[in-house]
Image (cartoon, rainbow, N blue to C red; front, side, top):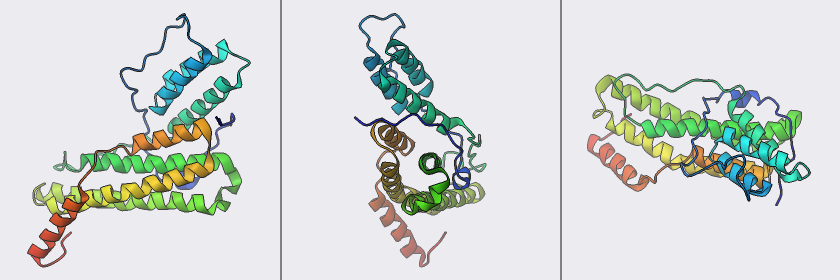
Amino acid sequence: MHRMQPARFTAVPAAAVLVLMAAGPVPAPQNSVIPAAGAPKTSAEQLREQALDLAYNLDHDRAIELLRRAVAMAPDDPAPHRSLASVLWLNMLFRRGAVNVSWKPESGSEGCLSEERRLVDGVKKTALLVAGMAHQKHAEKFAEQQEVVAAISDIIMEAFAMESAVLRAEKMAARAGIEKAAFASQMARLLVHSRIVAVEHRARTALAALSTGDALRAQLIATQRLLERDPVDVIALRREIAKWVVSQGKYLV
């Protein structure tokens, strides 16, 4: 199994700063339990595996606690050291320099497109994750990695398009009411849920070029958590939008 070597955190590039959002950790499942410090028959490898499970759910603080215990238990084993370095770096990626900005819906549009707003936030954080990894690995040669830069640019453009559509629909809902803004809301939902797949593909492609082993798995699962969603019937959305356009005789936004 390949594992990421310990690395010092460096600043993310300016392109990523433009898409920073508050990146609080996702709570771990309720059944994730840290064993007591003196619990018998718990090896350093078991602690490491439990810590990685917590890290995959972005519960970095508890994961770091377990990994420090694993390092103390097996100081000559490089695996806990490398996993600890990976989780410490991932924790800093989500915390260091993040802008604490929440996206507040327009007054009168509360409840409108709340899931889509959450997904747009997730796309922004995904761009930050990929950009941070790219800069961490390539530093001043970051700009030479054209394929990775293209993937990050695509994710940022998708975030911009999604956010623009959602904000426009929310403004319409705040001004004219949610019912009268139903058409704009449907279009925003269609855009977000049809393009989120492209964001996932671009992120996975770029991350696979930047990491391997435990680090890559952690980043992929972090991306999955950020973009997690229930399936949406985009075919039905397209039909509803087409029906509305035909009935009005023009394309309305």
